[in-house]
Each structure stands twice: as C-alpha cells, then as structure tokens.
Length: 292
Image (tube, rainbow, N blue to C red):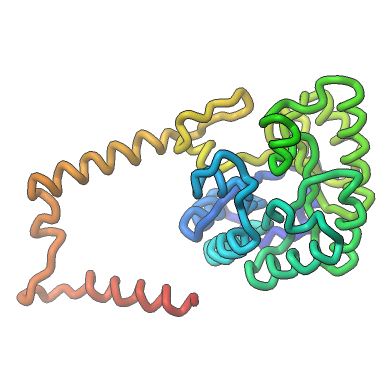
C-alpha cells in the first residue's frame, strides 16, 4: 500500500462520512498481522474466533482473557498501519461495568490493543458507556453473538421475524448511543443490516450481513481457504491455502525421506566463506529476543 498513515478511531469513523468502505480481518500472530497490514487492512481484530481456528474448540466460549492478551501482544508486533482491536472473551465483561473496565484495561495495557470489542446490545449500554468515559474505545457487536451460542441454540441467522428484527435495531441504537465508535452486525438479512447502517452515525462492519454495511470483516483462516470444511453462504475464499500448505508439507516430507533435502545448497561447511546464513540466524534470534 502506498499510504502507510496509521488508522485511528477518528479515521475509522470518518470513513462512513466519506462513504469509504472499511476493510477488516482477524489475525492471531505477528506474521499474519504483518501480511494483512501490508495487504491494506484498515482494522485488525484479535477475535475470540481464535478458540475455533487456532485452539480447535467448537465455539468461542473457552477463550480466556489471557488468551486474548497473548495474541493481541503478538499481533501488535506485526502491525504498522492497521487499527488493532481485541475481543473481550466470554464473561470477562458481563458481571459489572467495573469488571469490564479492569479486563479492557489489561487488553490495552498488556495486549497493546487500541480498542476492545464486546457482544450485546441494550443490556451492555451501561458497560460501554463506562469504558468510553474511561478513554477506552469500544466496538459493539449485535445480531448473532457467538458467545451466546448455547442460549441461541447454535450459530443461526438472526432477525428473521419482526420481533427479532426490532430487538436487533434497538440493540444497535443502544450501543451507538452508549458511545461505541463502530458496531459489528453478524448473520442477519441484508435489508436489516442496511436499515441499521442508514440509521446510525457510526460505521457498521458486516459479517454474513450483506453488502450494505460500511465495512466487512472475515476470519482470516476462513477467507484464505485454510478451514476447508467451513463453507457458509456468506464466506468467499480468496485463496486455497489449505491445499497449498498440505501439498508443500507432502513435498517436504518426500524430499526429507528420500535424502534430497537438505542438499549441499542448503548447508554450510567449515570451508565456506559466505557467512550469510549464520549471520541471518543470529540476527533473527537477537531481534526476537529484543521483542520480549
């Protein structure tokens, strides 16, 4: 990307006024963070989706605050331009506004995030207001809220009937009025997402909510085709890395077993005058050590 100016909270808000779409994606480590940052992402979320795509759980409930802080800290090292948001995991913020403030403070201080995201609508408005008053930028999240998977009976489309649609509209309005600077709309009809987007002064970020939102977010592993069995209607796979990684490892395994790798070209000896490889290893080791 030619423009490397840091994406701030005001910059994200201004994109709605300028009718510029917001590009959001998840990341969980420094390497992928660097790649998505260089690829032009405006907003990177360390989502509690890590519980499913990194840790192998069936849902996001097992993710802890320590997990989020750890991955935020790693991702922060790979970002130069994109805004970094950390998810507030299950039950780290719903007991009281003060509990939420303590947890969110850790995500910003220890995880080096620049905002936090939390799920919920009307009932979470006092908590959002408390965080915002304390100087912590907040991203809301309504519609399908994955941390409520057990009470919802699974990952299901929301807003399909009039009562449900009205509830989601009221949730979104409450989140905005409480001071959130943007809001995720997940898994709802595009007409509902469009109506909410038109009614709010803050940006909406859609996932499974159609094209009428102010921005879009996808889980990185899903959009890269690494989670091959996951093919919901809303997902577009922009690469097929799952098959490429598998094929690469198969080729590597074949060459190791056949004694073809490492070849002489990948080895050093006492007679070598080119010390590039050892120096690179030493440099990389020192760089990693300096980051901790």
